[in-house]
Length: 76
Image 1 (spheres, rainbow, N blue to C red):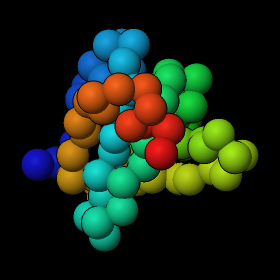
Image 2: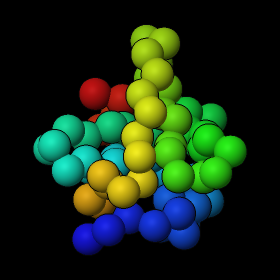
Image 3: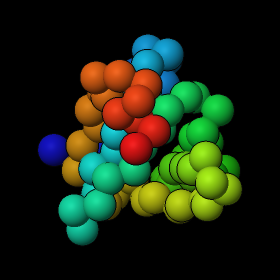
Image 4: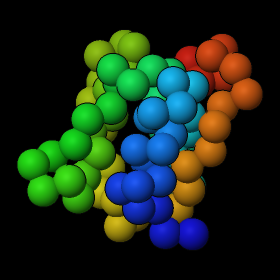
């Protein structure tokens, strides 16, 4: 599945924690909408973690967006 900007906006607007899966198998947890933003062209998501790390995730390499079952799942 190729992730679109619309898919990400739907996840963000749900007000629920979610996971972004990448082509390399890594997953990035987004516990709250304040932890994700986009570059100017909206081709890259910028995801920050609670420990202050920042990840630049190109939409073209995203393979899925799934809703976390709980806030704790999105934080681990």
